[in-house]
Length: 142
Image (cartoon, rainbow, N blue to C red):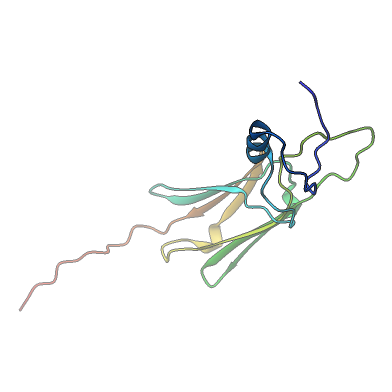
């Protein structure tokens, strides 16, 4: 196997069908526009909602979490390491740049008790619910 230097700006047309397929499946189609979308998992139990962002390689100070008029906005920036001393990268598949995701919260949450933790590359936001309200009632006809 031969390692060749990748040039994404090359307009050279692949010479064989095999090399065309290799190029198709190995090229990174995400433009370098300094934006990425981290994977988000949202779950719910009886007591709370949980939102988990997969954002490895970031620091707690890289995140901004804002709650305005029932809309929770999580934003941040993952910066690329500028030090390349002695390193020749053959492939970079991690995404860098800024992101922003917003979620409208239901009315049955305790917004003053929302907590955020960042452990092992996962930003976890816990949104506690209020006590269960009786949403159904029977009205007697008189």
